[in-house]
Length: 79
Image (cartoon, rainbow, N blue to C red; front, top):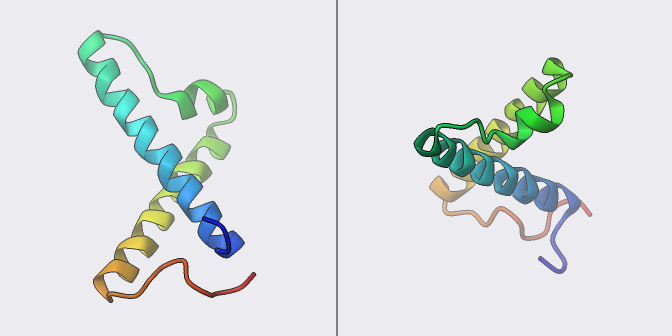
């Protein structure tokens, strides 16, 4: 991700956090424990936790729209 825009890097980071978190939530379901890392870190601040979930969703939606339009998400843009 060398010369990609800051917005692209933030979106990628949010997708990575969201994907890993959902994977851990699923694994925790099989193991009988709560492995929701976002909730573990931000559970004391539910509004902040919700904002993280919303930002992850917006990142996923934006990436999906770019892919559907066959348009590279991270080329050019604001730097």
